[in-house]
Length: 58
Image (cartoon, rainbow, N blue to C red; front, side):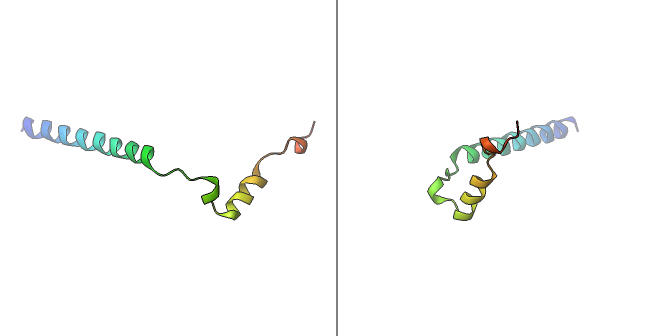
């Protein structure tokens, strides 16, 4: 009985750590989106959403 509990703990821990490793590997290896690849509407939205220095009240 106690070996089955230990086996469940080992399998669960292995799956969690393996899933986390796969997730971080995917994060590091995903393609980087350049400015030229972005949607033109997203570029306009990003440009207009940045705070302007002269728009901040004194």
